[in-house]
Amino acid sequence: MPLIVPFAAPPPALADAVLPALALPGLQALLARRRAVRDDGAADDLNAPHERALARAVGLAGADGELPLAAWSMGRDGLDPGDRVWGLLTPVHWQVGLDEVVVTDPAMLDLGEGESRALFDAVRPLFEDDGFVLLWGAPLRWYAAHERLRHWRAPSLDRSIGQRIDPRAVDAGHPAARDLRRLQNEVQMLLHAHPLNEARDSAGRLPVNSVWLSGCGPRQRPTGDAELDERLRGPFLAGDWAAWQQAWGALDAERLRAWPADRSLVLCGACDGVTLQPAAASPWQRLKAGLGLGAAPTPAQLLASLR
Image (cartoon, rainbow, N blue to C red; front, side, top):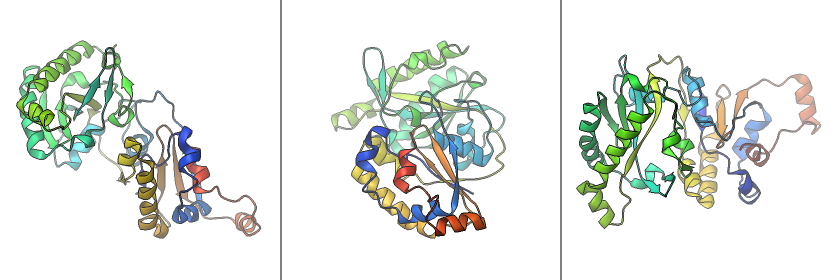
């Protein structure tokens, strides 16, 4: 079972400022005895590299933007997806401009279970009147099912946070695009006038003013498993690089310095990923290492290579 670490590399423009001070002896030792397998992505990918790595590890198939992560996540939340087509419906805050919006990290909402359930109960009739089935999984994980979500290609939340996007452009050619945009507009109008959001706004807290739909598809039977360590996510998305460095140091000390010889480690940037796979060194490789030839990259060099 691999360990997947999202947001393990800073943006390339910040690499020279952030990485030199990062001391990761556990990762350095792993690099000396592991084979690195790259997964290079593109800036316009709809799924993040850690989502692709998760799909490979657990055995989920799907095109970019169509990985059925919602149905997989439902199982983790103790819900039965059955045979329906599910999407992950995340309560979010949009910073709205004239022609585009910026999606704020939902973790910044600090949305408690009571608040989440109240908002979920408020929007559920809108979806049910449109033929959807809605289930509550966690404060930031609601699930919506409808046959219209089949082959709905959408950027995942982790590919959208902090980015300027045009919601009207999301899979605009899909047969259900117009209906889904109408439904989202109805949800936004309901949330705008909801007393809970008015109270949050008065208290200086971000209101929940929209939802984000992603990870759509029917259930696929998992064939494997994976572990995610997401401690770098919050500092990365907040641009708090001192906290990100501190979190990386803790991850290295707590997990990587005693890393099992038979487990893979997947490090992911915003676009690219690299899997450090167990690999026995040949006599020639051991000789080269002893002579200081063909030395493994440093952690800073590896992380700087990930976009």
